[in-house]
Length: 491
Image 1 (cartoon, rainbow, N blue to C red):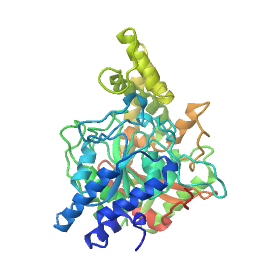
Image 2 (tube, helix red, strand yellow; image 1 turned 90 degrees about the horizontal axis):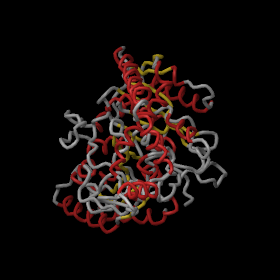
Image 3 (cartoon, rainbow, N blue to C red; image 1 turned 45 degrees about the vertical axis):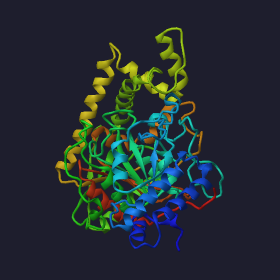
Image 4 (tube, one colour; image 1 turned 60 degrees about the horizontal axis):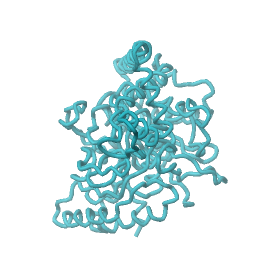
């Protein structure tokens, strides 16, 4: 029998339906893989007993012919999603050993459809980071290495644990969140597929908040088809989230393999950055060629406000973070460091509980929202955001179906290589992804090739609001042309 951990979700679903193996066997294979790969630090909490109990319950349902669309599929859950009676920390010391008495909407829908939880995945603290080095549990290790080198590489962030675990075959798919590229960038760094849905497509209820007008949950999986299967279960209207949009969830899997003939693909000239590595430029040209060969039409488009996206994002996101993180005060839950007054209690708790990057962003956010600076920074950034959104609307109004760009400005880099002395160096990793969050649009990152050192590189497709289906159809074309990559096992 094939090694069960190397199956895709679609293959495992067929195998479970034909009774070639049970969910318990599938779950046990993944639990063993997790145990053997602890050096990657992808999981911050393993839940083997719960996983086996869920698998047995699903096997009983499958035997009666009652299995759901994800019946028996073992998944990893980013530690930003509240899981009932299972520790949820957002990988921050300030949440301590917080155990939520409730389940996030997205995860409850996965369990409703029969998925099995293997454990909680590492992420940047409060999702603030582009490399998964800010977690209080330590950095995640990318299962990929440069050819002929043992340098430890980052998997990208903030969903680094999700991307690393999927790439290393520790889980069949994972939940993730994307505020400025936190699904698509780690997917590109690990040769996995990451989908950032339209804002409002997936409920944010029960997900630890970073920047409420930008955060969106989505899947990371091994193939475009697998991400479509997961997305169908994750998406849907939720009355508990006022930003959740009440429109039907299509069968995303049906979009896989659909013809892309006649589709207009925009190539934005503003994404051709000065000093862009030649291999990223080459990859982009190749990807455009694959779509053209499949019958799509390529058109040059202009997104003139792109150059303001990163500075505007790093005003809006920290401003919302400083507001959201004010609830962590040491009074009701999580870490508490006593003080002589209530003010001192707050200060001591936050000083010890928040890491450097979170403190940095909270201070930036508090500054841009303060009296005298609100208009100069926050209000102006919101106006820029409106212009960025309008740039995309103008493109789509001209009949463009999707926009093709690189996913990241480089391949994965080494742990500790970036952002030490200059945090802005790290922020530049989000240059191709933040516009999508600022405009609330859907985006997908698909593995498209490798750099000179054998590291994976990804392409990004940006779609019209609530038109994820087109992205799945186009993503499949890129995947078929580029092939699939798995890291050589060393751990």
